[in-house]
Length: 440
Ligand code: GAP
Image (cartoon, rainbow, N blue to C red; front, side, top):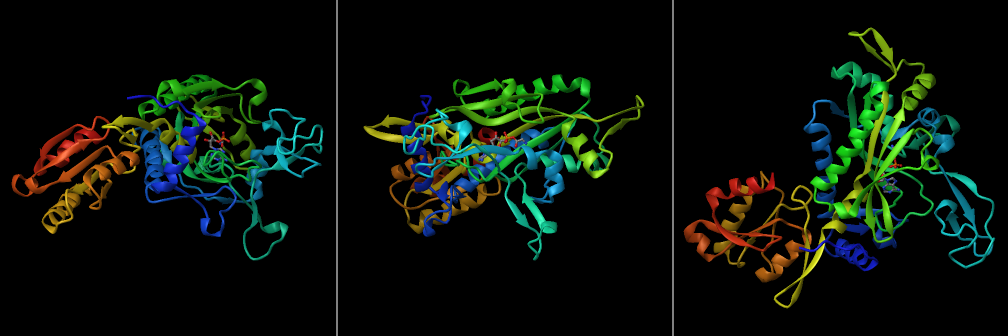
């Protein structure tokens, strides 16, 4: 089993596979596409959901100290005034006076050279471009109706801090987790779903005593890094990189990024930030509400500090595909296989009757019905069995179940494992238990 080397060619193959197999389609494609937005197809929606479920499972389900939240996407300007986004959430934008192309200055290799027309010193003075999408809530398009689409899910957790504290019986150290869409009017979206204007985040705000913040920062850096390894990312393609002082966001006293080795170099999947008491203090000041914790045991009142692991779901789903992609020679042919961790794989099991004859498809669908309450299953009765196996390999399906003519008499099926292609005969009565042992 080889480890994929991330190259531009491999990236093209992933983009192609995503379209061909129904992972990701360009949005509004029949109208020529729409500005780096993407739709997740029948297989992609399962992949993305599995990434989010795997995160939720480890962050909420398997812990007693983190609770969930689903806050609204639309918010009033006061939130973004207090959070600092109205002032600070900007990128430096320059225009080339020769060819009128537009660039993000901090992302240019040479800040004096236009990558489009090659002109030197042709850029306008940089201007701060705010990345938030502005809209109006209600029928009047006046300033009183201004609202913003959230550029991060995080603020929903801060503004609900008191609500959660008062209703959940949690006390620091405790966290609030949320998965949802965020929107940023990126100047230079690109690299497929890596940087888009509409994307999904998986964020958790962990509220701690100020004197314990460093301990929890280190804890979350290690825990989040391990999550990617536990879900099948090779360690050689991951690293944890502490930010330099001049990279830190306006709220952060320390940030480390979990980075993946993309074809264009190391780039961010997740940031773990020590946000101090910045957010609760800002929202308390702005709203007039007390956002603190009173510890009855010690008679202490304090503003908790926050450690925030903030990951991108859409970006991480793409990285899982890139890390899992493999090609190998099998009987003189190239087999493409996604060696996805079973928790991330879109389908866990595919049921394949050997032929389309009703004496096989009928009972094969009974096997399907037996498995569906336990696993996300695919069912396919078209084409030769070898081609159907290859299709499932490309989707990353860990197990294929073949119902053949012997199955009618011996009530057993062939179970084929994706990575080794090993096959074994399992009685239908034992099938659910057999697969549960391997898929949980
Ligand atoms: N609350 C902190 C925060 O939002 P961030 O580093 O700006 O931090 C967190 O975003 C994660 O969200 C990133 O590590 C990345 O995975 C994802 N992300 C950010 N901008 C994105 C974009 N334009 N497209 C896709 N994913 C994005």
